[in-house]
Image (cartoon, rainbow, N blue to C red; front, side):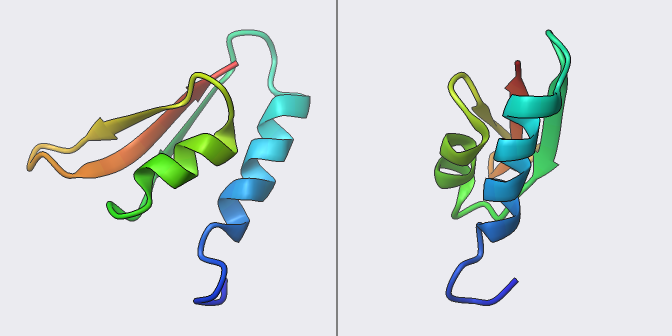
Length: 64
């Protein structure tokens, strides 16, 4: 994706997940540590940002 819209992919993934995931389906993503909160917001209500072993916000988990 271009530098002016680094979350384009995650927005599309959030739209896909909300429509196509089965009940209790999950999405796990490794993300840019500076964009964890913004990425979680795109995936949907209840998405959470998780830290890696170094304490950096590097993963987002969404469960439908």
